Length: 271
Length: 343
Image (cartoon, rainbow over all chains, first blue to last red; front, side, top):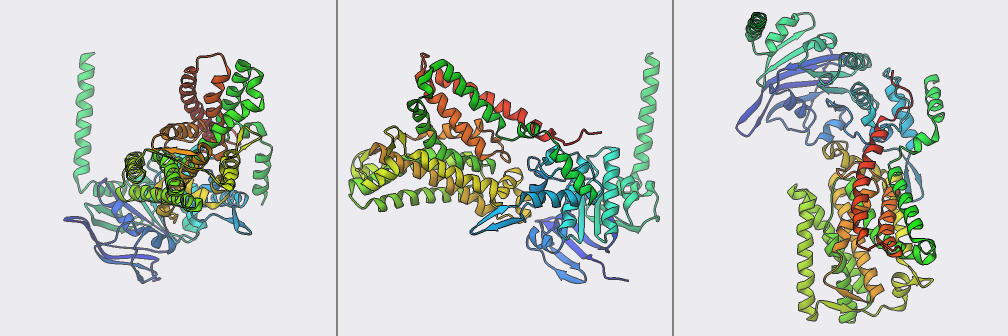
């Protein structure tokens, strides 16, 4: 089997006396989507921040192409091609598409001692990159990020990461704040990125979205890996139960159902 | 390739007017025009004579030189109130060194500018180091500089003011009235406009400033040297304030411990009237220039009319509120701006 693009071996992370991640081992291959599932507070954010160089692991190894890495700061991870796209995509709502696309790596035209921000190139490159991902509604690089829909912002952020040579794409709840149609657009873009051979880590707590795009699933519970399985090995119900911390979900659902029943009974009695 | 060409076509066919009214400085331009017309009608021909123009241009130039870097700072999401203390501190540094002690003017000027840069550096460093809002840090700094100015002045000269006799060269460069009424500061302001326009809108650093004001953490993650940039911006504003202090000393040939406080709110007012978002991330140099002119016209124009001069403050207050409301709606328009109708 090929070497995974990114591999975690027995990674632990604690903040002072509090253990947040226990002994996490994971692999992501090129052209594969790893879905990281877990309820709020399961340690998903800490895990991706560790991968993105924001936190340093307390112990354990992070390997890229089989070579051990140590990230001192977010830029180190970014330089190695690990790119994180956050829930709301564009973080600069009042900047234009072209300008925000090139934040920190602006194209410039040199003229003597002066350098000029090359707006035309920036706009054209940004618009072209996002159109290649099938978002044809974006055609003007001067538009402000804040005027785009949630799905378009995600698409732009993913296109940006791919444009700048990302090899590992970490998507932090990209569909959480989106409507049904917008979420479908984003999932299509995830497929497109996978087709281009990126290794994708898709963080979500929406099991349906995970099952649509995932090749490989990992469930985090209270900082530990509770399950690690491939596509088709588990049903939706099984995954939901796992995320909620075991069999409790079925009980909870039946409890809700009984409430709903008693509620409708009392309301019909009142009538 | 075809999609590429259709993209440029559709943006070219866009009506230029629609594009223009969505520019960030549009609101402040409309405000400036309205104020100008108002005073033209209310004050008559005198307001548009060269005497009328010089009266507000002189005011605009002094505030404008400070308002430009304050505008950049505010776009980056910071404030600087310490400028109110730096201006008299700089005047007095120059007047004490070159006037009272009779040392060469260059020494006094360099000391005053150096003092400005140092205060700016400390401001930026403290903001980064403490993580406190720059509003608080620079208010603290304002009092510290004010106290030091008073203390040193009394200790060294035994007085709270000092006089200076400018040399011919500095009189010409900094204290001259061109044509008997236009302060030479106006030309320095024009130069500053060009420099700050280049920084914010032409160079790549401008992009960093917008990004910094939009989201500091994301900007740092994108590889922008946010700490260096923050300190540089604070140093720019205090340097500009020190420059205004020097030019005031040269114009009035004396310096006092008090004075300069008016610049704090006036500069912020110019910037906000000019369409800069109080929370950072949005604004333009041209807008700040329009805001400064508007402010100066109201400030001076009132004396050309028969109105009670106290009305000027009311107009400025109302204008500020109006500007914020108007800028808000222009910004919404900018955000909603699309080339095609959404399906």
